[in-house]
Length: 146
Image 1 (tube, rainbow, N blue to C red):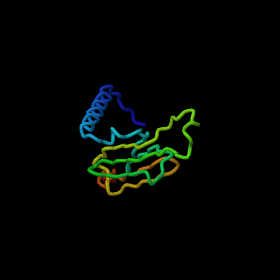
Image 2: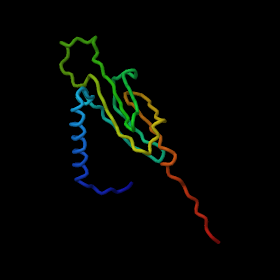
Image 3: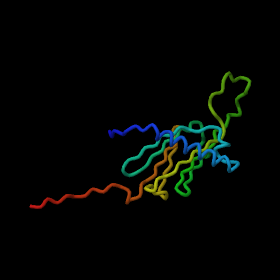
Image 4: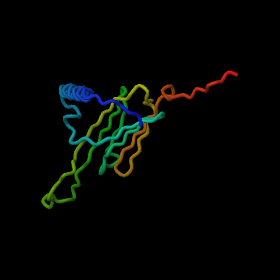
């Protein structure tokens, strides 16, 4: 396990970048951020060969999910529809969020955007993005001189 130094200002800069992006997107008018009803949680991790994303999207049909890559930006959109067969007056509480969602991720230059795999199982959308061959680590053999 690698030890990383905690830098409190890194989080402030990250927050500032998110806010700047939000205000920039709000000027676009009908942006997905202003029309999204909720934002699904995501786990992102990587190893030597790939970057993995796992999004929690329970209760969403596979046909209601849209995954695309354009200009090194991975976009995941979808919609959770409210079950119309239930009568509203019988509900005591509605805590699950319904409607559309939108997530966008800027991909590093080491990711091969031509080889993206998406799998959907048990409410989890799993995206696998392979790294370019030149970005993968290489083992170098050491020759010992006699």
